Length: 120
Image 1 (cartoon, rainbow, N blue to C red):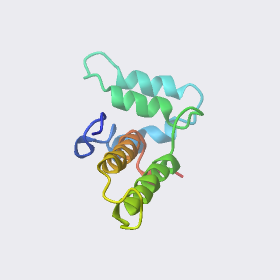
Image 2: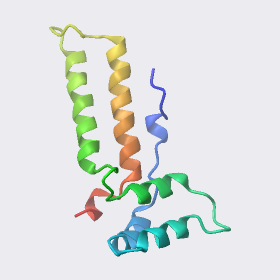
Image 3: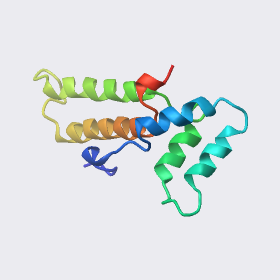
């Protein structure tokens, strides 16, 4: 069983329109702090997921859509094993949980990234 959030309940940290407004400012020196301050301004609800997404976007320790795709390919490869009657792991319940964890990880990473169509 997965210990992470349920895949169906993973929501994007920021709406596509919010990312569209923020992305042009991020490459400008000093704008990260301005954008982050806008997300934690007094009187606004705290949005830790939005703060994390913006803080990690484009950073060496961050992640990309390639990481999301890698997680999804792993889940697909494991699903093929699970479905193959000739596989040693055919119909393995533990493998089902592992697939779900890879899918959940991909969805949680994707929720923190700007929409693909906005990333060049």
